[in-house]
Length: 519
Image 1 (cartoon, rainbow, N blue to C red):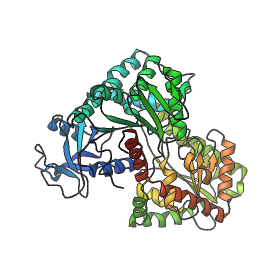
Image 2: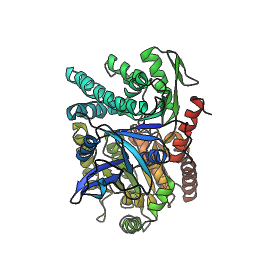
Image 3: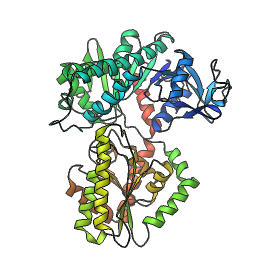
Image 4: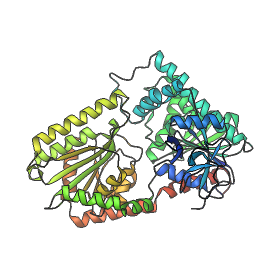
C-alpha cells in the first residue's frame, strides 16, 4: 500500500505505547521494536512518509531517561533490521542503541512524553484500567461497584485529565512545528480528552481517534459521574472522525452523543453536529498481517512446537480445543471451562477423547479483580481435572505462558478455537487461527466479540452467559463433518486475507482524504 500521499499533510500519531522501547544491558542502551499488528501497521505508515512523528509515553525507566535527554524534542529511530537511534546529539556512546549511526533501513521520528509518576498511576491504574475498561466491557455488577468517591474524582482530574493534557500539548507542539496543519491519529481509550485540547490549539488539524475496545450504549456510560462522562464525550468529539471496529460500536457512540449530550445526530449517516462541525462515526475492523503469520508458521520454532503438541494431544481420533487469552475477566475464561465441564458431563464418550489447551497470559495482576479472577480460573480447572481425568490424561492443560510460536503452533492444529468473551473490541486470535489452521478448525465465537460481525457466518456462535448453549455449540463444532469444517475455515481465511491490517489502515486514510477534501 502506498502511503506517500496520505493527505498531503504531515502525520502525528499518538498512542500510549510507542513503536520502540529503550532498555539497558551490560553493553549499554538497547532499543527494542514494539510487537503487535497495530504497531506494525502504524510503523509501516509512518516509516514511508517524509514528515511523520509518533508521540508516545515512557514505558520503561530508560524511556524516561531518553525523554529527559531529548528535552521535548523528537528522536530519529531506525526500526529495522536493527533498531537504533539515528543522528542523536545526546546518544549514549557506550552502546549501539544510543550511538549516532546513520539510517540504513526504515526509520521513524518519535517523541516520548514523561509524566509525573503519581499522575500516571491515577491515569492508568485508577481510570484507564480498571474504570474505563470495566465500563466499556460491561464488567461492573453495579450492585456493589463502582463507587466514585472524592478519591476517584481527584484521580480523574489530577491523573487522567492531567496526563491527557500533557500528551495533547506534545501533539499540538508537533503540529505547530509543521505549520499548524497535520493529520493527527489518536489511538484508544487512554486519550479521550486529547482531541478537544489539540483542536483548541490547532484548529486546522484533520483529527481522527480510533477506539480499539467496545463502545457500549448510553446506559453503560451513566455509571460514570455526569460531569466526567460529558467531558469524555466532548473530548472525543474534538475529532473529525471517531473510528471503531464494528458498526454496532459506532452506532452506540452516536446514540451517546444524542442521549447524554443532547446533540443533533443523523443515525443513518452516523454523524453528530457539534457547533458548526460534523463529526463522523465510522467502523474499520482491525485485522492481522497474513504474510507475517505465514512466515512464523513456517519457522523451525513453530515446527518443533507442532510436533510436541501432536504427540500430547492428537492421534487415536483425539481432538483438541484451544483458547489463547489474557486472564482478563472480559475474556470469560471461567464460563468457558464451565461449559466444557457441561460438555463432558452430558457426553461422557468424549472424556479422554477431547483435550482443552488454554494458553493464558496473566494480565494486570496489580488490580484486585484480575488477581481474584486468576484464582477462580485455577479453581475451576482443578475441579474439572479431578473429575474427568482418564487414563492419566487431564482434560484441561492450563499454561500461564506468553509464547507466540507456541500459540501459532496450537492455532495450526486445533479442532476448535474457543472465544467466548463477554465483550471484545475485535479479538485477533480468531483471525490468526483462520489464517494458519490446517486442520479444518472451527471458530466457536462469542456473539459479543467484534470479530463476530465479520466471521460469525463462518463460525459456531457462542452466547457467553449461557453455559448450556456453549456446551451444545462445542459439541456441534467437535462433531461437524470435516468437509463442512474446511468449507467454513476457508471462507473465514479468505475474509481475513482480503481484509488485512494494511486494508484496515488504508480504508481509514481513504475516508480521511475524502473528508478533508483531498479526494
